[in-house]
Length: 199
Image (tube, rainbow, N blue to C red; front, side, top):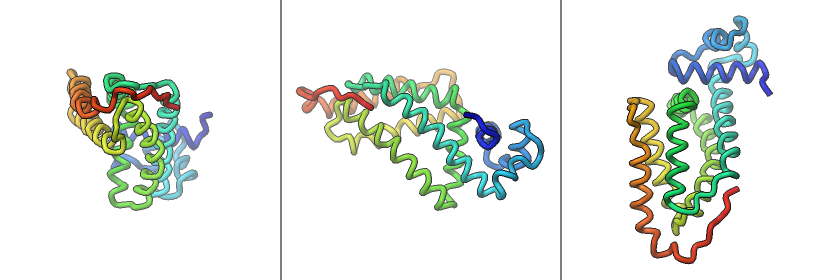
């Protein structure tokens, strides 16, 4: 349910995604949300408090997206996992572009704020668990090794596309190639592997 607080935080995410972290001020958030001056300051007394709350809101929105997706996705082959990763890459650089850019902007702030860093690590652990299950279900005999390889490659592709948009976004080809390469190392142990439901 929308509240004035969440409206302000969603406005801050839009502001971050469109203008970057330097544009994040109480006054700018009020204007973006279409609320009276002082609204953001009433909820977040300092800029650091605003940034921390934005980080939490980003995490909440991303976690909700993963929790909505996870019970419906069953990647039982490397090709199916590639399809999921391609879909997520297109979502993150398309409809969710502002949210993704806001996340990277806040991560930049976390480099100098250990509290933010710890927060992202804590929230990210649940998403990591979902993805580890996907990689295991797709047939990886060593998901703890393979999941970071895939996700780090995916993150690099998304970040590059956000920074230097390419109409012919090559995520599909690169992710498919990566999964094909990994599948070669999985093949000896895939026979006899049963499909695993994610959720």
